[in-house]
Amino acid sequence: MGGFNNLFHTFSLLTRTQRNSLRSISSSSSSRSFCTDNGADGLQNSRVKIFDRDLKRKQRDRATWLMGQTQNDSFVDAVVENVLDRLEDCKKLFPTTLCLGGSILPIRRLLRGRGGIEKLIMMDTSYDMVKLCKDAELDDAHNEKIETSFIVGDEEFLPVKENSLDLVISCLGLHWTNDLPGAMIQSRLALKPDGLFLGAILGGETLKELRIACTVAQMEREGGISPRISPLAQVRDAGNLLTRAGFTLPGVDVDEYVVKYESALELIEHLRTMGETNALVQRNKLLKRETALATAAIYESMFGAEDGSVPATYQVIYMTGWKEHESQPRAKRRGSATVSFNDIKKQFGNT
Image 1 (spheres, helix red, strand yellow):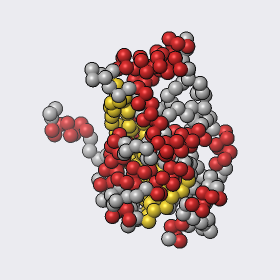
Image 2: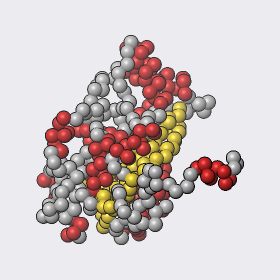
Image 3: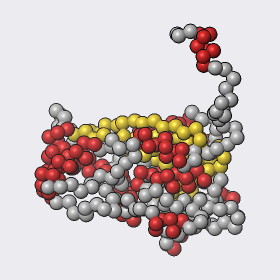
Image 4: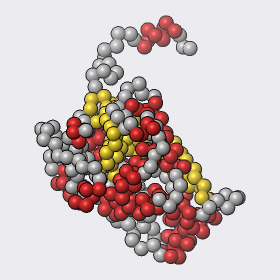
């Protein structure tokens, strides 16, 4: 346990009371550097801020309370299962794993011994969410064998030592970071050579029905539009993100989920429960009542089904990347081929 705790500093977001209620994480005496060394605070101040991270933390706090009032979320569970299924495709085991914020509770609940995980670190920006995950009662013998630790931390400033993890999982959380490439670079730095990064983020086609309804309602009622739904990455950007972050053997695939709701208002409540409501810095903080009602009416008029339900589309982009290691396959040096395509064509013809 001592060697495991030496991977982390006590993160500054924890208050004295929070430190006492969570497992103690001691400061390390090792000389290895952290992923956020070399003036991370200065970078944070100089970077353009798209999202209000403090507001997002508060939304996660609210989502914690709402989660306690509802059953398991079938959409989130489906995404988590899709992420964890990738561990079953790997022969490699991942003894030390970090799970970043977004869906930490479903991941812990649905892990079921996959990946050969022995030490699991659950991290979220919300103290309430971390506490909910820690206090959750899990009826799974596999989880009882896993040494689990809980910390409050920010994906933009990982309190993790370089080359200390075998696996990093981020499910439905990284799309709220102001510097997505930077957060992914820190994840790569935290991994040991041949370590695996598994990520799932919401894509640009997410909630396209709500975007249209909001735009039409605002144009009708207010004569203009303001951002109500955050910008999201496109599928074509995901591969570039992995490459830019320095991952090898990048893999990207996408799924679309269509969830049916009784009304547009039920959709909004679901977004609140997931902690996925608007956190843009330049958002309009006041939504007029008539605009909200018009949005719901337009939504149901344009997209409502015959049974009275309304659909909402969620596009989920799954990303897989490995930290470089000498055992991984590499492309041959350009110009090193010994066989000409013309020779192959002559041998096999135009079949």
